[in-house]
Length: 166
Image 1 (spheres, rainbow, N blue to C red):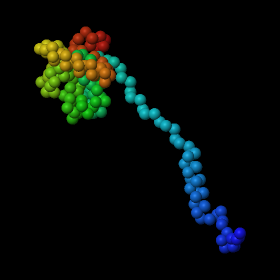
Image 2 (image 1 turned 45 degrees about the horizontal axis):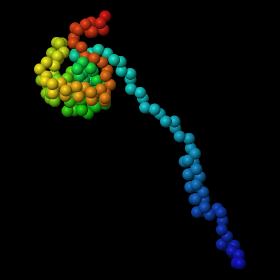
Image 3 (image 1 turned 60 degrees about the vertical axis):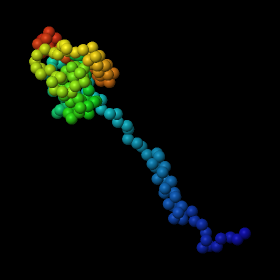
Image 4 (image 1 turned 180 degrees about the vertical axis):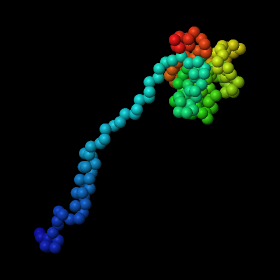
């Protein structure tokens, strides 16, 4: 066997070996370095069930960073997660902060489906046929499955509003 000459001796400290060793140390560091603790998302503020009158419900239309609420058959739903539909610029924006019962029952998004006098009595839904009542109940069931009920809607000056004020 031929022995390598003095100029051909292989050194462990060759540049390629040093480069590979450095790369290996870097990979070990990446694997073993401490990771920052995971942070949990901030919990939404608690929502308290309350009684609304139409004027009190009106500001909850999604404007000025307010949540989006709407009422169906006296139940007030928090539809903020559906802001794209019910908030400003959405197809159902007329219903935000209002009693949407008649509009949903009739399948109409027109302003004239909403109660004009917020200080007056609630819409008793008179004049709706059985198909329209069925459509409204379907909407109500859909809201119950998807959104949180945050309150109930009562007329201004009703007995329930008087209890709250006292």
